[in-house]
Image (cartoon, rainbow, N blue to C red; front, side, top):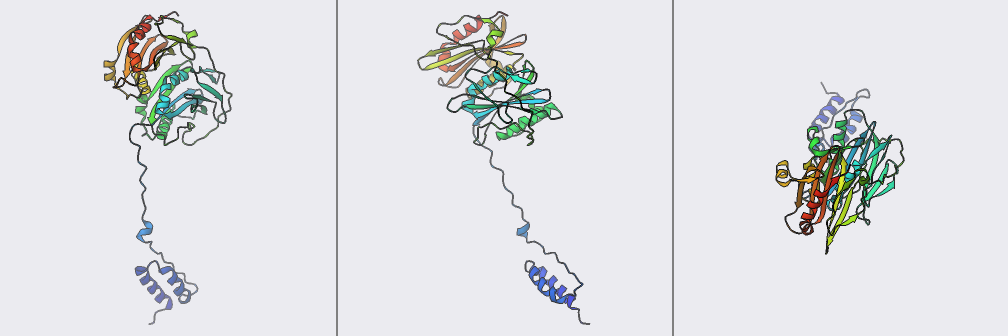
Length: 380
């Protein structure tokens, strides 16, 4: 019995589909238009070629190598239903000399209701905020100042510790660093006491990808605008007025204004070499000795040390009737910068005495520095 035209067309199309899948579509339109009955609909699935289904994988960009080029100083203060972010980022050599000033600044923050105020370190400038910024601060070289942003955001519901971690990992991502776990958070940040609670400080080094401008502290892309707030007046009262001390000034030291958090400040020069001495009280327990020493080491481009190395580095020194810790930090050569640092705790306050400058000058001033530290007496 002769085959029906529709049956012949189907057989022909199946044969073509096996050998020439790409050409099938045009041929099938031609054959079926004249061979199949009007009420018969025939459908064929044309298989894609292997090339069409192949997925190309793109390798992620390589992680930068060598020493980190950028440093970020960032802090958070959780105040009721709002989080205050303080953040600055710049090249390592530009921002490192100001790491202590950053810590002094964030520890000076206090609140009148929900409005913060602070003590500005010497030579820092403050501008009014705009948009989401409560304030913008600048410091460092006048030709190319480093910018520090102050931004408040609503505190989202949930665990506060997890929220701090999410921000730290976001900042690490901006510096092309791997994220950390909740268990690693404690060793990755410093939590210091302030007059109205605690401040969490992250000190990170990495590679910013070319831009050293600060990025807004948004989490998961949620750009929720907080209620507008006015910039707070800057409290210019010095720490020296709140925490009086007496001391004997070595010969050759020049007295400087005790601005910001400083209870006393001095400078000493010899030829083209110079050094600066500061005495700073910070409220509460301002970090452990290891974290403070590693912060100082970072200011003169030295690597971090561990607790075992610290034990062989630190020695005791008397200051104001209490025993403090004394360290000397310098590189492997006689050139470059060095730091002599002292930290001592009294009830409610941690005192820091620090000399920073040219290494050769510090070595000549070692006994003057130690004598000055031992001469300090607390009058309150």
